Length: 230
Image (cartoon, rainbow, N blue to C red; front, side):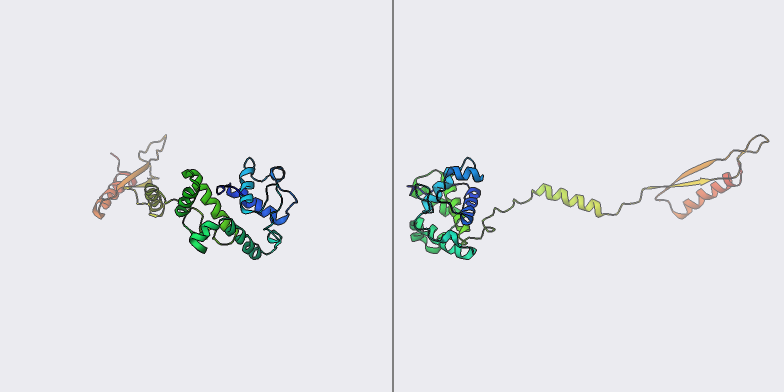
């Protein structure tokens, strides 16, 4: 058994345990892991963890205390047996905290491993994360509860999003000027050789009153539509 508490990649550890539940070979080592494509370049860390637990002995064979745990088909039965293996390997931690050791905050776990093994902050965090992963595999810890929470949205981003939403939902205001095309069919000037048709476009003031509009249209009617061109 290792002198210090082990640590390994969580994904590689989980995949290895899952593989051993499917088929536990007579001997399991780095060569087997490489053939299976499990934890590439990190095989030694996973194997060290399994040896610490007593799942494997120093020769890569099934540990004597494993018994039929990895042969259990039902998850609940496997988790019960695996939890006993983990608690036995971390006996000192469980002597201190009892069953509450499974759900200790990460900070307390880091403090325990750093003090017990005189490890650095980085190693202590990895040791704590490995123990939590074993807790998940044992069915003692909810994996979703251990997932990191998403970061809060940046305040400026939220403001921009709100403004964008308001811009999309706010009705467009009418323009100040209203184009009104008016076409006269009367010739402006009479001659024997041609007739001229004039198309007039008028921009009415948005703030004008009814009297203003009446004067404009009266002028149009008198000067253009009736042909009163000087």
